[in-house]
Length: 253
Image (cartoon, rainbow, N blue to C red; front, side):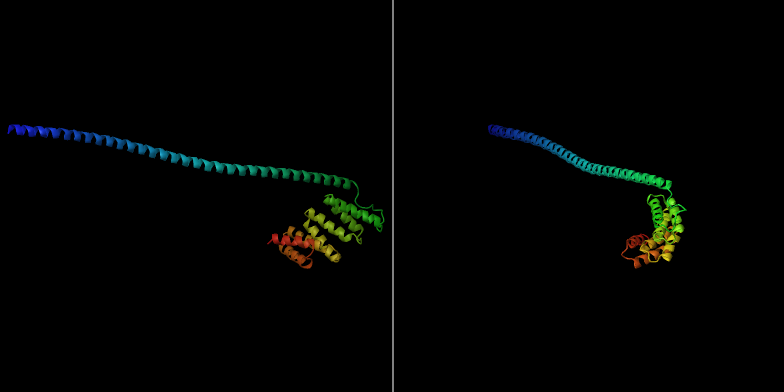
């Protein structure tokens, strides 16, 4: 009996020892698996962080590229603006130089014309057509040279000396132009109105009406100026003066 019990106990120990060893091996395996899982998780976190860092870096690179393109566009606009400004400045100086040369030439011509009496001598025959033509040409030369004050005097003397001249309508017209250039709007208006009264058949009627209108504007008589311009366009629609009148009417609406 005792031998049987001893044998059974021995058998039990034989089976118990391997089972315990198996349990120990399972725990160790589980620990190793858990360690591996922790490492995997750490690696995944590291990969995620690197991926996020790369995405952030890519976003920054795209933002920088966008800013660079923007700066390039601004630079091109600035370059074009500078080129346009340089061209405008160059054109301005060329125009200014041209104007100065023109004024210098006009001033020299005026001085030369002023040094020579523009009208015929008092002793000359007022019926002499040659003297009459020369007197008109001298006055007109002063006007073209830009010497408006001397031109006004010359035309007035011409009209006083040759009131019935064939040049009288033109002399009055250029007298009005010279007076207007001197901003003597009242004097120019009287001269133009006198042309319509004394020379109603003059070919310059349309130009005279335009001159009357701009004189009225200069005198702040805007209603009268508007009426004169409308009259000009209605009576002489095909004239150059009518074209200017239309532009003036459009600008004063």
